[in-house]
Length: 263
Image (cartoon, rainbow, N blue to C red):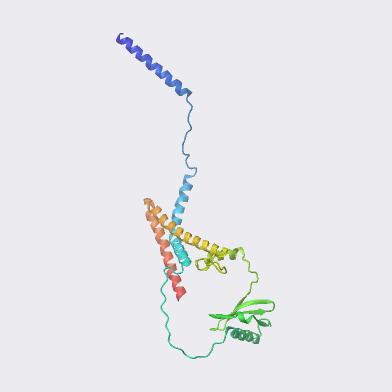
């Protein structure tokens, strides 16, 4: 076999391989294309992300405050200051203070002597229920309406509000009661000799656990959000300004409110 014959055989073999590869490609089934579709509104998504980020930075001081106060409300002994020990200074014989029922009767008589409002007559209701807790509190009837009256012994002001006989909770009262319900102190079993928890105490215990979980999650949310923001180097300066302004406003309001409450 000469060199020319060998080259012709090699060229024929290469043509056969090209034909076979073309035939296979023509009859091959195209596979599914797995491409991630691009976002339809990249500008809107970017705006939402930035808004979410800066809103979180603005709310971080307030979220931390609400998380800490929720835990303090739920655990009254947490970070509580130690009360000074009380002492005895002797016994002094002084005039006896009238009981709450006597105060209540005196207030009702004085109101009737003053003529009342539009000639109404006041009547003391259930004198045994009168109590003195900072002020004298008692029940008083004005016509067919019973009022829970409070008498301030310091300035003589008498105020009252009608007694609601329906003990059912409206939606608003139920939600506000949920907001104020906290602590584990009221979750002990009452009225059962075997010491088993009642359904009410079990629900209160579960709600107290939820308050703890929400407080801790709020703190985690704020701290993790700060870490995620710090990873975006291009937004560190602007985010620091927003966070600093929000923290300053929260501190000033807290200091001012403290002075207002203790002043």
